Each structure stands twice: as C-alpha cells, then as structure tokens.
Amino acid sequence: MDSQVPCFEIDHSEVDMDEATRIGEGAYGEVFLVNWRGTEVAAKTIRSTIASNPKAKNTFLKELALWQQLRHPNIVQFLGVLKHSDRLIFLTEYLRNGSLYDILKKKGRLDTKTAISYALDIARGMNYLHQHKPHAIIHRDLTPRNVLQDEAGRLKVTDFGLSKIAQEKDSYGYKMTGGTGSYRYMAPEVYRRESYGKSVDVFSFALILHEMFQGGPSNRAETAEQIADKRAYEDSRPPLSSFLYPEPIKMLLKECWHKNPDCRPTFEEIILQLEVIEQDFQNEKAMKACSSCVVL
Image 1 (cartoon, rainbow, N blue to C red):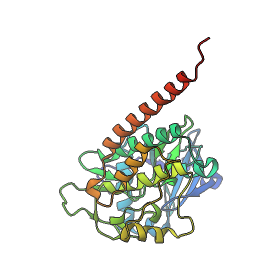
Image 2 (spheres, rainbow, N blue to C red):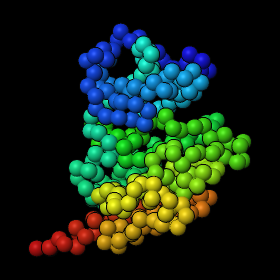
Image 3 (cartoon, helix red, strand yellow):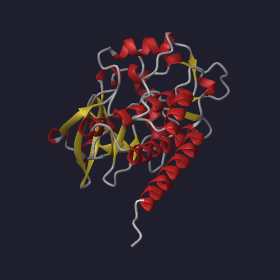
Image 4 (cartoon, rainbow, N blue to C red):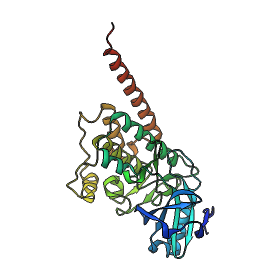
C-alpha cells in the first residue's frame, strides 16, 4: 500500500465473494453481504474504472486508511481492504436495519421525539468528523442513504469515499464539481462550483432533518438537478408548515440552510440546540400529562 498509514489488509481467501448476497449499490460500486470470520459484514466493491487507475486507487486507499482510524458510536466502522483479483473491495460493519432512506420510505413522517433523536445521532457523528485533527473531514455526500441504523436503533454516518481532508491552511477551500455528491442535498456553493468548507455538510443535514419531519423529500415532481439549480440561483428552500415543524426546528433549519455558508452553525452548536429542543419537548409532554391527571 502506498498510503502513509496502510489499510488493514484482509486475505481474499477469508471472504467467499461467490457466496455473497447483493444488498445495494453505493457511491462507488455494489454492496454485498458476506461472512468474515463468522460475522456478517458489508463488502463494498469499487468500480473497475477506479480500481484499475493507479492514481485514483491510491487516493481511495488513503481515504480508507483515514476512515480506519475513526472511532465513534455514530460512525460506521471500517474493517479493512480485501484484495481480490483486479477488484478493490473493502469491508465495513453490516447494519441490518438499512438506511434512513429505507426508514422514511417505510414509515413516512417521524414523530418529533424520534426525529430529534435521529438528528442528534447524525449531528454527533458529523461533529466528530468535522473536529478531526489535524484536519477536519468533510463528508461531501451526506444523504439519507448514507445514514444507517444499527440494531439498537442508533443512526451512523457512512461512506466517506467522497470526503476530503479540509486543509485549514488553504484559505480558498476546495473546489467540488456539481456532479459530485447528490444534487438533492447539495449546498448552493457546491452546485455553483465555488470554494466550500465544512458548512456544506450542515446544509445537507438541514435537508435530511426537514425530510424526517415531512416523511420524505419535497418537490418530487422536479428532478434533483432542477431543485439544486433553484436553491443555488433563486434561493429556493423547502416549505416549512407550522403544523409539521415545531418553531425551534423551523429556526434551526433556516440557520442550517442559510445562503451564506459562514452564517450556518457548526455541528457542535447544532447539538447544543437540539439537546435544548429535546429537553423542552420532554418537559412540555410531562406538563401536558400532568395537567390531564384527575385528582380524586
């Protein structure tokens, strides 16, 4: 491996890919359920166009080497790289409950308590990435499909294949093409191909939070690219119904999808706000329950 911190390598004989069950498709290839050392894990295959390109492969391996150093309850655990003929395959923990996309598709709109709890899970995972030293890790493709649920019901952020280390010393930030990441969750500055920073993930987070209260994406009649274009050039944002969104959540959403990236809160600030909202919601429920009690 050319990476400074090599990826943990798993001998291909330990995993029988012929017995693998295809369970989905990721940003860079197909995802399979396999057995490794008696445990079910996810095997993610990397497209041959990347695996066969030495420079692209090396860049990818460096990002995987970075991922393998990450440890957090709200981050999917990277396990290692499987070298298998001309393919590049890496293993992660397998979360059988699927993605937040699957949950919303099945359940629709979430109740306030669940939505806030899920939002805190995502924010804590993202805060860990953004506070990574010596350089922050920007996810760049935070979507409901890239948020998975474990058996305990906790959400974990996954797929850092598109993430890059944000060099703090580079005052101009990184350039990211409009074709990178998912249009529906893309920050306006990314779509306009401008320099960007960590707050692109905050924008994406806001749209995920909005969907949890609504039960799915808005503007389904328009293509994701049309939606991204309107957000970037017409300052368009999803509707905020008073019936669906508690006032504190509406205020948080407006801050997180602010057109000025510098005005968006950090995930550390988002966590603090959500914890206050969660506590206030619990107190309000307790008071309502108390007022409905009948003293005999």
